[in-house]
Length: 535
Image 1: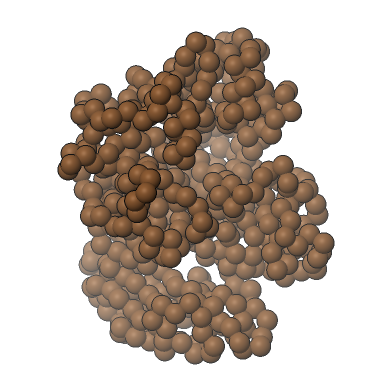
Image 2 (image 1 turned 120 degrees about the vertical axis):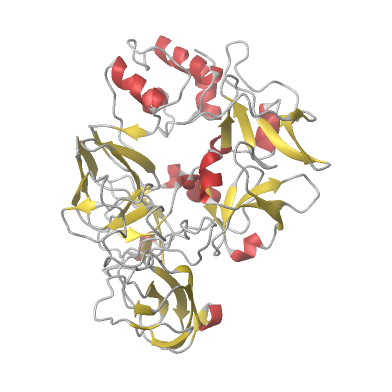
């Protein structure tokens, strides 16, 4: 991501109070990043995420302009369900009712205007208010492959009277038909992955969100046919976190290939997005975590002219070999989001279902921390019940209090959730815990003490930094980091260190890394800590 210095104490204080919010500036959304953008007049916040990165993002009061190059895409969503007003007149995708997030995928340059009055779905025909729910679609009873493009769709939906299908998300040349639980359908000809879209309507003409399913067509002897890139969709409903879906990107244009780059990590010299070339196509990684989970290194990325390559399917799932641990959120193909709740050595790991979106958000978890896994990987865990409480957290959660740098693992001890202090960096790393999975809890959320984990204290000690730190981290170690960076001339002298790792701190860390020939990722790891602790 490009470096952007933020000037002025007042602006910094605003970011400290509302971390992750971007105001009127020019920015660049890099591959795998998620940011929040606040527009004014009216005041409304949008969440932007992109698997490819975009050329630029300009925010100016009540509007933001997304500049996209060829092959770029960005998903814009609003947690309050407001329609996403844009100059392309693209229709907002409504996700299971007006109280759920609205979203829209852009593949070309667009300007979005702030809207906090029109709610997604509120103008869909003035219907009865009974939006079809518990919706689902499977192709050939969930088979992964088919040898014929003539398939059978299985449908589920409550309160639905009609439905509409398409091989493309725009539903062009499609017509509404009476609701039924099965439907014969013809896929686009040619081998490769095929996707079928459906949405349902109630008798009052209230329409559901768009959902879809895929199947791989094989053995027909024809080459794959490109299809438009869809937004993430859902295949479930009810009170669960059904709005969070498995991100999938289907192939787009074809072009002249350069076989010598097959299997290589590549990027356009003018962009930050990283791809791997597989079968002559550019496959982007959904985010940096997935990139690293495959054992990849940014040091091995080649800058090259890749404009002639078509975009292939996004690598959105962690490999089945990845060692998940406590505190991590996982999601397979169903609608449920789980937290890894038991990760003791020598026993089968367990996952607990976080039942509702309100519990998820109240727990301080973030959607961009979801880890998408295969159904095979999910089968490696024992599913042990569900969690549906606000003001508490389930076993397996990594927590810390706002006024302390100590990190704890919540454990189920004889039916009682207790907190175990992770008292050494070596133990934290040995358990493969992730700093991004630590949830900050209020001081009145009290747990009995369990047995400690490790020996040497995690946290700032003897003016040394011992933890991995990144944007969103907070506490005395971040305060020490900011002071060290300020003393070395990388952190602005006119900004008082406050212990919160925001954009200013990230920029300063990158400057330090560049000066010391370390890859400028803006996160504090072992190499960067070594430099910092020598200052």
